[in-house]
Amino acid sequence: MRPDDKRLERYLGVNYDTCHLAVEFEEPEAVVKRFEQEGIKISKIHVSSALKVQPTPEARQALQGFAETDMILRNEAVHINLLKTQAIVEELRASLNHRTEGAFARTMSDLYDFMRTQLRQANLRKECAAALGEIADPAGRPFLEMLVDDLDPEVRKNVRWAIQRMAPGSLAAH
Image (cartoon, rainbow, N blue to C red):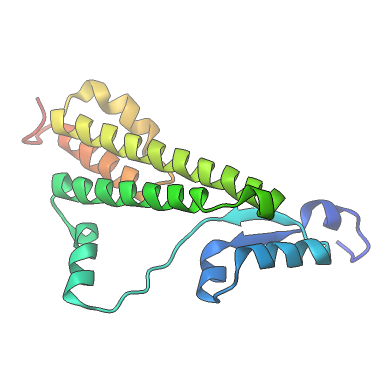
């Protein structure tokens, strides 16, 4: 493509990465307004996060669930963290001021609604995979196979675990 190619205007934009902006301490509203002023299109919003913690005993304990090897305990810890994340997203959504923030508030509200839905669906898929692994009934394998490539790594872990429990010769297999 050449600089005067009209396709650039249509297809080229910024990947608004929430984590990168957060670690640079940039305010989302100011960044979006600057993009608008400069005529820069946001083509993708990448919702990600980063943890910044001091290695205190409390911080290590709070993160321990992510290192758990027992799938039942791990699922419980992940479930609790997903619920906490949903609560944070809901608080962010509730903090929007639609009167003063206008289009930005509407856009962020829609984004928070999308995030809440995705978190709930991921939690449901994760829980279904874990339940099928617990009963180890091979009749659930077709459902699990649909989730093998799920975008959520926690869902994929549960799916692999459940399929292994259904394998012939597994102590859990019927």
